[in-house]
Image 1 (cartoon, rainbow, N blue to C red):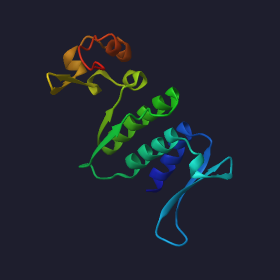
Image 2 (tube, rainbow, N blue to C red):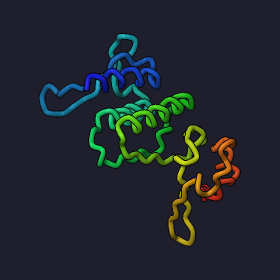
Image 3 (cartoon, helix red, strand yellow):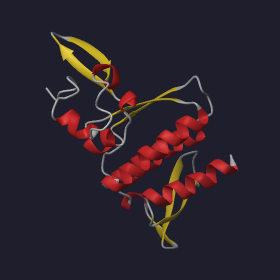
Image 4 (spheres, rainbow, N blue to C red):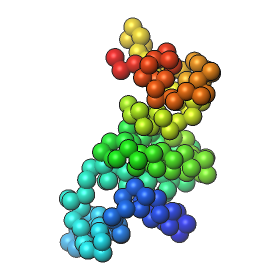
Length: 165
């Protein structure tokens, strides 16, 4: 757990560099839990934290503290509300932790940045045809795209699937 907390602090600082400390406290009069933040060593009310930062911290938390390899973790649109470079760091971190812990993680996205940071065999396309939903692996659909930027291939429909409509 100590190693995980240290990793969390390091990786959190890559994505949310201004936050020095995050603390979970019990309420004074009830059993409620609240998040407290410090930014530049000063208290920062949780209400001041952006939605993207809260969402990113939630993703880091579920990945770092989940030890059950039988759990399926589904992360919907991790890019919500964060800078494209932070998305790159977050996707890299997700890949690292999945590899180390052997977790089962599915990430859904509409983000070119997320797709660009995937390997061809990691990318699955979802299409709806005549009311039926179909999945196909991008590598199986077009194994010759190794040199092509995946986000550009996706946007130009070279993967033959995953269209927005």
